[in-house]
Amino acid sequence: MNKAKRQAVIAGNWKMNKTPAEAKELIEAIKPLVADANCGVVCCVPYVDLSVVLEAAKGSNIGVGAENCHWAKSGAFTGEVSAEMLASMGVQYVIIGHSERRQYFGETDVTVNQRVRAALDAGLTVILCVGESLEQREQGVTSELVAMQTKIALGGVSKDELSRIIIAYEPIWAIGTGKTATSEQANEVCKTIRETIAAVYDEDAAEAMTIQYGGSMKPGNAAELVAQPDVDGGLIGGASLKAEDFAAIVKAASEG
Ligand code: PGA
Image (cartoon, rainbow, N blue to C red; front, side, top):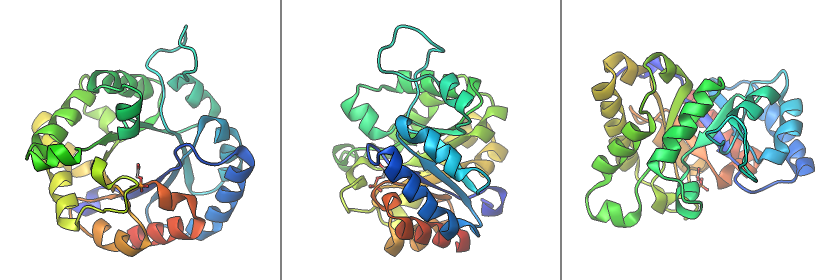
């Protein structure tokens, strides 16, 4: 597999953190630190922070994303936000299927697929999250599970549309726990996902797919993780809230 065929992307997932004023401050701090990045840089932020972050990131190399979107264009879905609404603001990315959405808000592989479809139709680039729980890893079903999550999420997605899909492999047991997958574990599952793309689409599509690792990635372990042949950057939670830490991870990916 040829890593040169795809771009590494470091994406921050701010989760439910930062008021608009704090978000502006964080983006302003990140901007100069990542200006020379040799990889994609994205910050996915709470809906209410999107306006200020889009404004602050204007003219920089930072892409801006949301953390979810609904599958309908509009309608009676109290509290939800559509992909079209995001696109109309100038948002370019959206995280879909994060394990916290699946775990706490009843997301299923089917609704993840519907949201992916809506995001693509609105012109957004999707950061699609897949990953196993500790129990599933111990049961030895990780490969089958992530392959299935990937296949269902991408149902109805054409090969051309894959250029607007990034997949993030995030073992649930590593998210926010300080427990990182070993670089071998991370690479093994990213490779399984790549093989799944090759099986469903073809080798070219698999080689071009950006597949990130996520789960307690930080400055101290990023270089080793992103150096793996099938790991193309990362989705960063906790460490994306500190400008220096996020920038250090971007630097590791730029050099990796
Ligand atoms: P973490 O979160 O880096 O805090 O483990 C990663 C994620 O949930 O995307």
